[in-house]
Image: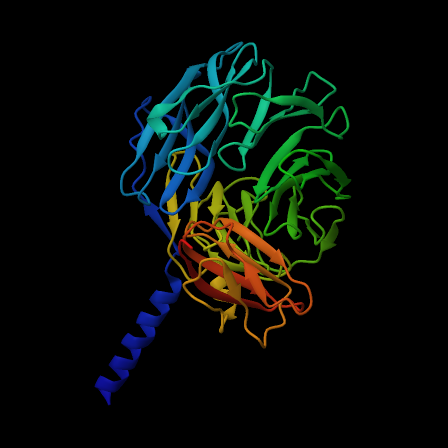
Amino acid sequence: MHKQITLLLVVLLGSTLTQAQVPWAPVTTPPWTAFPNQLRTVSNLQLPAAGVVWGQMFESQSAGNFQNYVFTTLNEGQTWQTEYLGGGNADPAGSGTIITDVWALDGSRAWALLQNAQTRQSRLVRTTTGIAGFVPGSAPTATFMRFVRFFDAVTGVLIRWDPNMSDKQVYRTTDGGATWQGPQTLPVPNTDQVLNCVRLDDHLWLGTRLGWVLHSADRGLTWSAAAVGASSPPQLLSFRNDRNGVILTSSGQVLRTADGGTTWAPVTTSGPIHRADLTAVPGSTGSYISVGQPGGNDQIGSSISTDDGTTWRPLETSTAHSQLAITATGRAWTASPARGLLNRFTGAALGSKQAQSQPLLGLYPNPASDVVWLPASAQLREVAFYDATGRLRQRVWLRPGMDKLDVQALSPGLYQVVALEPDGRQFHGRLVLRQP
């Protein structure tokens, strides 16, 4: 009897320890090589392809000296590369070069916006050969270039947000940045300031301090603007698909849209919402993650919502996070404040498409080359194809009675197929495409 009780206690204790495990694992960080006793701040954390992480690092010391790096790994953090892109002194008037934005398309192709700390003159650098290959790129001569975003290797935008000018502008390229069209004036109040830039598939959203959301559904070609109507300034903005998104304001209020940002409605929430960062699981049916750090009205830890921001439950309460990046497959990384530490998510699936959906049976032929037939019994509203990196490659809105799809525009390879019924039920499957 004593042995049985002991065994039961061991089993229960083991179960408790397993449930209490923190779902974030520290990662061996890049070899930071700057000043002793430095303050390190990671920003622009990105996961553009399988196994690939990009970000930028700002290092400073008490004398006001600073250095800027970009960093990357191509093997999920086993090895790292860093590249110095400028430095200087912030006191008293400022000198040198700062990084205002970094955008990576994959492990080889990336862009960075650099700014003179005194004149605020901006310039663009780019690479097509990895982190060590940054070279000057063509860009308009202007101050205060704030964001760079590319949708593919040829189409991208530059967002200029000069606080000394009434106009807020966007430039656009369709030849990889060799030439730029514009500027086009963005429809926001003169005194406003951009806080967020979110890119998902062909869509781009900008969130502003005065409570506006700007939206382009055509890769930055045309723009619309909508007032959020929040009681305090919007702080964080994220979208899980081209229609559904969430805003978190500086006071902790959550607002939600189901029409791409045209209208927003306040949400009555329950559970802990952290304020350092909030990011959607792309392509999910309603999953968002929030992370926090000490200070202000925030606290350390992370939480998850699977109902579009209404109900939140803790993931853990022991890790400090300053930034978060998530892919459609549920792969997630965070940065910790102050020392440039990185963490990788090792817990249960973060509300990814596969975790929330049912198998899609009857998809044929598989492998396929030109046409795919849908299950005869299915009543589907839309079908989306994601490549091996979690990137959306094709979405088809189905007409009543439509039972086959043309997939000739997709490159050969392995795809995750995600299908939705009119009531929101989700199905998943895998499809192999080969050369015709």
